[in-house]
Length: 190
Length: 190
DNA sequence: AAAAAAAATTAAGCTGGTTTAAGAAATGAC
DNA sequence: GTCATTTCTTAAACCAGCTTAATTTTTTTT
Image 1 (tube, chains in turn cyan, green, yellow, purple):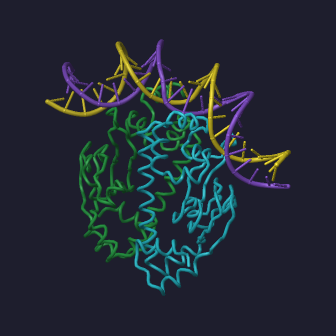
Image 2 (cartoon, chains in turn brown, blue, green, orange):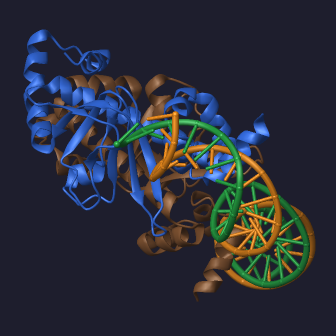
Image 3 (tube, rainbow over the protein chains, first blue to last red):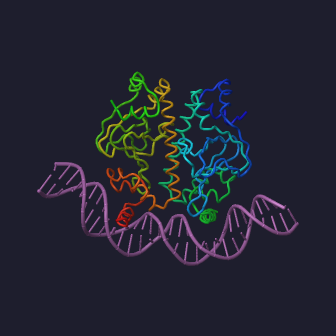
């Protein structure tokens, strides 16, 4: 039952079978097709989502009506609009499946109750969030030190699995590039 | 004793006086002058730092030998190289006081021991880190949707206290702009 | 298998923001 | 209070990456 989910937690904290059983009461499994939405602009993001299988993207629509992708989540990554989730504010984002996916959702209220009942999960999320901050810090450094060309080359050599399963125009959007420019860079490299 | 520190924790979790006493054993207070270093490039970042009073900046030296500032920390903010702190890796960053400051340091080992003895602190840091992720997500969105001019105007109207106490060229560096361009933008606005 | 829709490419012209260089103003140290 | 250093300004030339627009290729739907 949800092996990616359980294994991921057990990588960071001890969790006996009884605790697992308790934990499962707080999650809602979702089977989704390609291009289904978990969140739309102006809604409050009521859950935090774990990608058991598949791929999610998060984007907002900018003032030129472009979809700006700000995040992807692959298998065993978490995804939410943290600001909306924590403070119950309407979100500017859409969260959508990129492909057929199995998602585990934990609602705001379940999240709070789960943390109270299972202190290991408090620890787990402290570690996960700390790692997310570290990742954000690193990505941020890349933005300061690399040109857009270097940023693209770095990304596409570091994460070839993305280039596989995500269309090129989405990668361009995520990296803050125009599809035309990515096309030019690819030509240049060959 | 360290009112900013204790009040900040009590904003998020309950902490009785006995717990406060236990907690204080894990922290090392530091009184620093202007421009003193807490971390230099190639060192492992052995502590997480709380700004009780004053101001810190974090920067790295890029391949053109510019100091690129990636973060500031004002009163009651935390600062560390999370990647270095968590995984004991050498850091690419410098952490330095911008002005005379009072800093509370918690070392890697103290941090771990503290979390084991005081579960409230596990919760506190889970919340703090979650808020840091939310802040990073928001800043990231701004980078996608704003031009550099808009980003500068937004920053300088949102955080006038910074423009007060941090020299202009540091703000330029933090925002990823040249000092010349900031100068031009300021002229434009008046 | 054909039609429709979505994604990727190509190329020319343009612009937001950098680079370079020099001088002016502000700050800190003695 | 003066000298040395740091910070800020001005201006012109330049370029990385965008815009626009048209064409081709790939994918999806029927």
